[in-house]
Length: 80
Image (cartoon, rainbow, N blue to C red):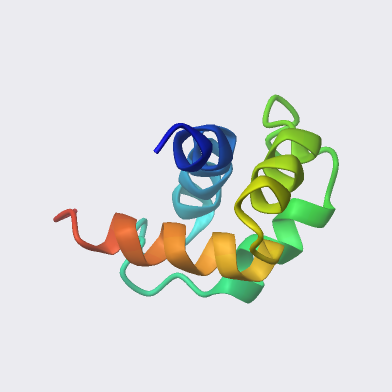
């Protein structure tokens, strides 16, 4: 559980910023590729450490894509 919390703490901030930029303002229609595009942009949500996110994925033995997808799926369980 500690590894998962470490891995998603920064990522949820990044995902939240991506969601706010979307017309729908919803995570329900968010795709992994949208998050990855913003992840690569160092100026977007600059306070979210990409190194921590990648380290968290590595600690779990997941790819970055898997971590993003699982986090998005978990966030979709909450109502907007």
